[in-house]
Image (cartoon, rainbow, N blue to C red; front, side, top):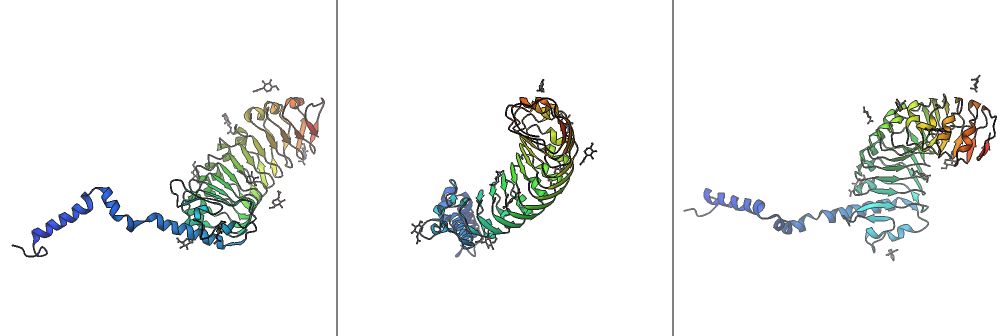
Length: 357
Ligand SMILES: *[C@@H]1O[C@H](CO)[C@@H](O)[C@H](O)[C@H]1NC(C)=O
Ligand SMILES: *[C@@H]1O[C@H](CO)[C@@H](O)[C@H](O)[C@H]1NC(C)=O
Ligand SMILES: *[C@@H]1O[C@H](CO)[C@@H](O)[C@H](O)[C@H]1NC(C)=O
Ligand SMILES: *[C@@H]1O[C@H](CO)[C@@H](O)[C@H](O)[C@H]1NC(C)=O
Ligand SMILES: *[C@@H]1O[C@H](CO)[C@@H](O)[C@H](O)[C@H]1NC(C)=O
Ligand SMILES: *[C@@H]1O[C@H](CO)[C@@H](O)[C@H](O)[C@H]1NC(C)=O
Ligand SMILES: *[C@@H]1O[C@H](CO)[C@@H](O)[C@H](O)[C@H]1NC(C)=O
Ligand SMILES: *[C@@H]1O[C@H](CO)[C@@H](O)[C@H](O)[C@H]1NC(C)=O
């Protein structure tokens, strides 16, 4: 007989069996009840979100409307002004909406600890300093609106890790450096607006890999080089804003093939070449066509009148020649027709538009 199970091989085997039974064979819901107090992931994350928000608050140097007065101990952080928590994850921050509040401050890397964030809107404030590269850890981020602030430094290329990004607006800041080539690898990006910054370098071919792009705004920057023909691959693009840069070369033929285009702004560059004669057929949805202040030549295509939604045609200050197509008068929505500073002739009167020849 065995006196103690420790010394008895048979007994210890049955103990192991018993332990196995306890851990693996007992139904799962029993185990849950027993282990719940020890795990508590939600509570832990709660603490992280809260402390990250408090670090963010500590970097706000001026809050004239007293937004952050509500960010206090009396209220749970999900009820602080501008903080939105999830429906499925009621203790996690999913959105920070702090637009137009005259806030001064910087954005600390700690913001990236709010790992459930889907939406950041800091637009129309006075945030300065860099856009932290740590934001790349926000794998759920879809919407990033930083427009109209004083952010400086470069666009962190790490943002391309946020594969769910759909909307980026960084217009009206002081951002420098290049457009990260990896932005092309964001499959869901439909609006990218970097207008009015100091972004330099070339528009990279790879940007055209962002095939969901509907709005691409790069106007009022220091971009140079040519317009990459690959942009013609953006089959759902509606608005292309490239005016006020130092772009040169000719407008790639593929660009005239994006039949979804409604707004095309290429003014104030050094672009050469001519407008294809079938433009009105290949871009039937065009509303605004602005190629003013460039070095374009050739005639104004008769087919323009086929783009029946055109309301603005700005071709002033180029070297266009030949006759102004008299059928432009049939464009019922046309409100602005700017043709001065060219070598054009007109023989018949144009009707129905406010003309500046
Ligand atoms: C916290 O904010 C709420 C909402 O603005 C306010 O009613 C409350 O008095 C504040 N509590 C403290 C301690 O400041
Ligand atoms: C939050 O992020 C910062 C900087 O990215 C890091 O130093 C810190 O350890 C994080 N804090 C928590 C509580 O996770
Ligand atoms: C980005 O913000 C600017 C300034 O508010 C606005 O004019 C522009 O329409 C926005 N861009 C997009 C794509 O929404
Ligand atoms: C760009 O934005 C600044 C303010 O951020 C403004 O002063 C300037 O006029 C803008 N430039 C253009 C060309 O819109
Ligand atoms: C863009 O797509 C092409 C193939 O279409 C691929 O060779 C290239 O590596 C891609 N570039 C980026 C930056 O994703
Ligand atoms: C434009 O589209 C037409 C018809 O889809 C095609 O045959 C032509 O090759 C395209 N041109 C360019 C430059 O992409
Ligand atoms: C273009 O417009 C002219 C009249 O200006 C018309 O005769 C022609 O059929 C139109 N072409 C297309 C493709 O709509
Ligand atoms: C405009 O075109 C004419 C004839 O094609 C050419 O002689 C002239 O140099 C051009 N002017 C400019 C400023 O490019």
